[in-house]
Length: 548
Image (cartoon, rainbow, N blue to C red; front, side, top):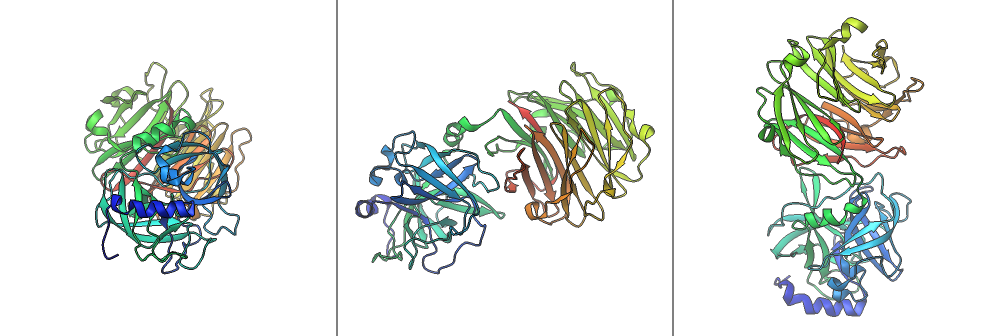
């Protein structure tokens, strides 16, 4: 471009173009260099068909909501902010996560509800059923900055194709940043790109910055225009509005995550739509634990109990109330009994109380908290079931019927035992004797999902496996490989939990990333998500599920 017009200056030209074509444009198509998106990449992007008369692009922001341009659905695209809320006037279909539209990958959903924004060309679109196995592109908290490098992905026209069958990606530069929009320039934005995502990448993780709306269409097939600039509606300043208007599809269960990093202990929550809160500093609100060595958590009816092992082997307990306030850490070492050499704890809800597993000087211990929050003394599990040499990890979960499942990693092998509701114990079972496909194990986590126990095990070389044990029969499923989902990087921490019969797990990789994965009760997996927002470098993760 020889000059960069302000949004108001080029508006008339764009509106004339819209009236003539009957559609609006937005988001990137790699029209000039012809590069298509790699198969399976940017699978949060959708091709939207509006009544067979208009095609646009959209972005999956959680498992049942997309965001796009209101002009895509408006009778008169030049009057985007007048779009009424409710069902689309024309039957509207979204093909999501299908990089090549000639294939059968991804998901197809009908759009059942529109919630437009009144101050910018932007709309939330509700899908008729949840989407599984695809990535979500979460709105960023950071505003675009002039000169910032941005990316995009869309299904719009290219320099030589009227209706492409493939997703195209593009590079942009942010120019003028206005109150509700950002000007972008770079790869042409063409017809069919309206509503496509404009995003930045932070540590390899994409964040939605804006939604493309209007364009000069320079470089697009059928256009004599030479200018390639475009306008996109910002999303960073409307996170609260998005959360409020997508809350209708939430259930009352959340995932709660503790992340121990090089700078402290932090807490965040993920709701059933897949949206995350920010990470809060636990020690800032619940008090400092000197030489914090390890942390675990479990919840009872929305109250999240957090346990921390201090560097002196003492055990501390705090809790986060359902209303969000915190009760400070208190030293419970004397209540459960001092165990010199305590290095690890794992905890699970028993419904009305808690079951706590400890690892101290190579021995495994068990204690319980009753409904009145009174603790029993540590019981020596190793004395009952036998000593496992060189034990390094413990995990626990509750399954229906009142059984507490206990796992131990010792001598790079995995073991399992059950404490039954009557207080009796089964013997150690040698999980590593099963065909896990791992030569050695350095991490293991349990999650109870109804009557089933789900397990994830990791190896020092980066292998990750998942299996399910039926509590009714005691039989194990085959171990499935999670490497294609979680990657093959070595892990330094792993945890899992059951949330409304969903299996949710997280790992901390050796290169300092937290990755989260979810398996639904129907056996379908969501796409792996790289969690962000915690200060410092993560070293450990702990999970629990809780009701509001």
